[in-house]
Length: 85
Image 1: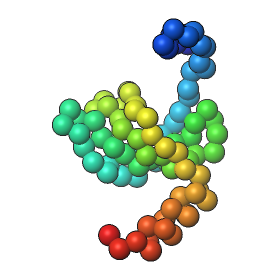
Image 2 (image 1 turned 90 degrees about the horizontal axis):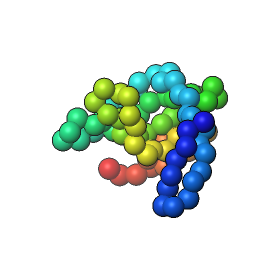
Image 3 (image 1 turned 30 degrees about the vertical axis):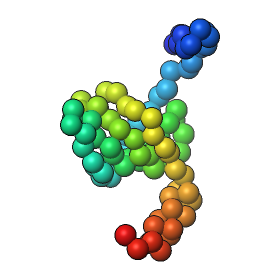
Image 4 (image 1 turned 90 degrees about the vertical axis):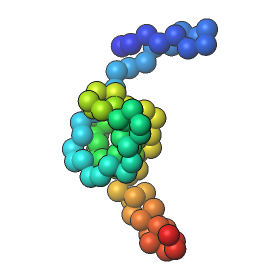
C-alpha cells in the first residue's frame, strides 16, 4: 500500500500493477518527450483494455488517461468511421 496525502486528507491507495500487452501507436509527442500512446494494457492482472494516455520518455511514468474495453472500442471505432475528419 502507498500513502497519499491529498489536500489535507490522508488516504491509502493500493499500488497499481500493469502490463503493456501491445504497443499500438504513438498519437503525438510533447515538447519534453512525453508521448500520447494507444496501447493494450492489462491492469491488476485483468483482461487487457485499450488505453490512451501520456507516457514519459523512458516509459516509467504515466499521466491520466482512459481505458476502453473491446466492446467500448468497437463502438468508438464505429462512431469515428461515421465522422468526416
